[in-house]
Length: 602
Image (tube, rainbow, N blue to C red; front, side, top):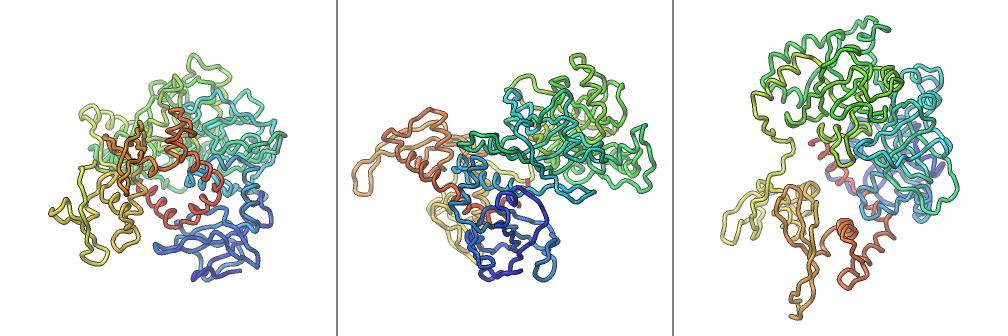
């Protein structure tokens, strides 16, 4: 039932979802749903539930309305933001041992934020079979999986391959979903291989599931010398229901009348930017045409990597179940990924509708059988080349959906606009302006939650929040003075998340005077912050340990040297307490809330 934690009533959920963490800890798992606000305290890392001492092992921030599915809840539906937290009634040492025997989570201990997101993969819920209600959490043999190290990251971008017959077996041979699906979004868990996240698209001529390095999120478990079962969770299947409606109109083999008008509309930032390109009349005319499924000419498509062994030419795309049919040449498509922040995020690309000369006939026929709803990207020419998904709004292929427009009027007008105008980048939604090199002398609170800072001694007083610079000097001033919890300074904790060091270029040692006047050696590193072009020297001991370790690995610096022993000690300490560190991150409700807010703004 419900329990009271500090001053909050929380919901103990008897959740019917199936996910890997439940499988790992079986009957010792407890799921709590805790309403949160801007003033919510951190989650409790250990908690007594039903008389048992429980350990926080995962958490997930839910910002949308949620309907309780279990039989135990308090009051009305949880319509506010809340955190779904996962506790297990075992000791911390047992949790660490269990997780590390499943995958090498400890190797990510230097980055608690990344580690928390990787542990969250264990609570990805499995899609359920609509016929039986059974979850698609599948136990399989290691021999049915292979990691292909020859597939470069820019080729995969988070996408792998699965034999068509195996996909049909997983989804239920003979079922409608098994016949229609050409791709699935998955989580794969293997002590022998690691934990993988991404998409699997059907491929001709293979007899095992092919995973890629770009899909791997956690390395394989240490000291796992015998084959263990592999678990696969299916999260989504493709094509989507809306894509299938489009195909019902375009496919001559399955044309059928859809009585309801289309609800698909161009909207949001994409519509705003296209109108900003002088296309209002064209867009208004298309909006009327888009009410009919027969004249609808845009859709959201799942991104796929090339499953034809490089047959799709670089810079080109292939539309599965092509809505205008195969055989017509010189067709183009307008492509982007939401959110769109600039015309530069919109690309017009050639579409492959005839078999390319270097593609095998059998592979061409195979992909031409896919239903409408996917967009397959050509393979880049080399491992160092930027992939086409990366060019399209910095996307990948582990589940990203792309907005595709094939209306010829819209494409023609957009191309003409680009020819007439020199496209200048439009402001991004969360702009980070450049540093102006100000120096903060002191601060004062002029009224509740309003703080001013003085620029230079005797200089003007300015509202602190108005001085938004990347690697904000005001933010750094507040951090140095430990003002984050003081009235008027709470916003610093958010801005601190936005700005970070992205590069360490070199190091040096120099002598400085200590407090007692004696000389001491100071190790400094030259750093560059996100959004800055200039660098500055910082005390090495103040830099995040993961950045320092990456730098020493890159420069092949041994941590046994006199100047670096301190880093070796910190590394060992952090590796030993990886779970305690990630618990701090998982319990930080404010951090989760700010992260979700940042992602929405981006």
